[in-house]
Image 1 (cartoon, rainbow, N blue to C red):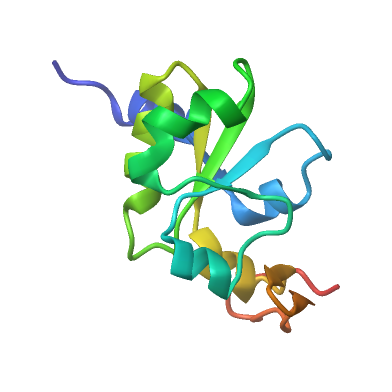
Image 2: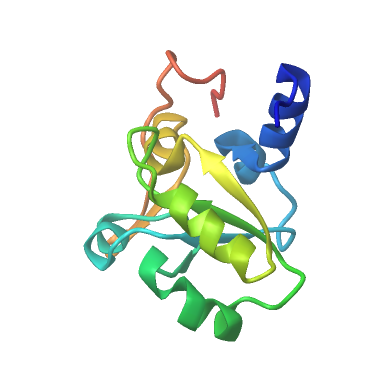
Amino acid sequence: MSISASDYFRAKLQCEIDVMEVAESQPGSLIVVDTRRQSSWDHGHIPGAVHIPTANIPSIAPELIPAGSQVVVYSWGPGCNGSTFAALAFAGLGYSVKEMIGGMEYWIRNGLPVETAGGTVQSRPDSLVTAHTS
């Protein structure tokens, strides 16, 4: 079976969300899930995110994430496909799920807040990747 490029990209966009769209979403409209290992979570994560490592999604997600939720998963960044495996796991459980393209790397590069053990930190936006200036 062959699909057109138009159909492929339309379908792809239904499964992805970019960093700024997540950051600018209405509070409570998305459940953002960090799918990385504990040590990565401890190093820093998106404020308000839920931590469920990919391998634990089938057993833990039904307890933590209400059915019918719009789930957004992320891992480190474009060089990591962990969030793709996580999105597949959530989809297999029947959730509406999107993969945050760019992951934590582009969250940080856009100058968005990161929650750490020491509090919330924010770096300057990288002008090479964002027009975000606040």
